[in-house]
Image (cartoon, rainbow, N blue to C red; front, side, top):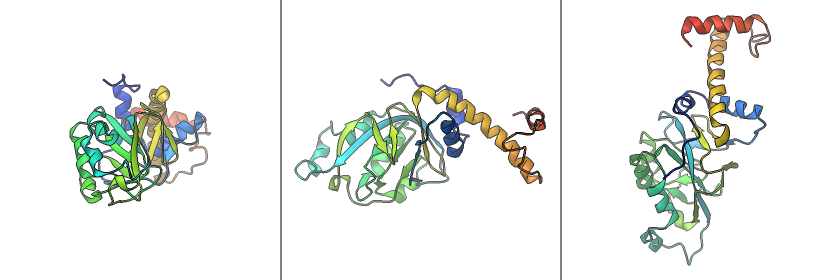
Length: 242
């Protein structure tokens, strides 16, 4: 049974409508600089946004006497066990040591996660069967396609422990948010406050973009150093129901 979510239902929905860029800024204001996974891309950029609690899988380098096809007969094998136990609404985050020379998983396991109600999957390695995964209505992020089986280079070592993924620390239960630009990690204990601030920031930036498209200078507008800007923004929110 999974732990209670650190994120309210309202803020979970809000995070589906804020960008990784905005979230990174909100986290930076709190002193958190290393929150965006580097070099990862969504397989289906037109697919749904990624939001959910982290459920982690850690790989170490494979060893020939341990990593044979026979390991998949073992129901305690961490990769296979994780696919069956990752809670609905969570994101499977895989530490593949940044090594995409062998696959972190393939389309059958990713499809199984999708059918179980998992929110998405992220690896700093690669996926095999990537064209099939890209056609799924399911958020999946990786470094690049990778055809060889994971057993060639990866040994599945641990489930639901702190890991590093694409250079970012990920603890079980952290909130993972992904869009077309990248994947952000939000520490669980500040997830609600970060979601609320990023949501408000997004509304303000929508106002700013409208003003800039109308020909207004950014001076005094962004950031809102002109005392008239907050007044104008409040009026815009009332008129637009934001």
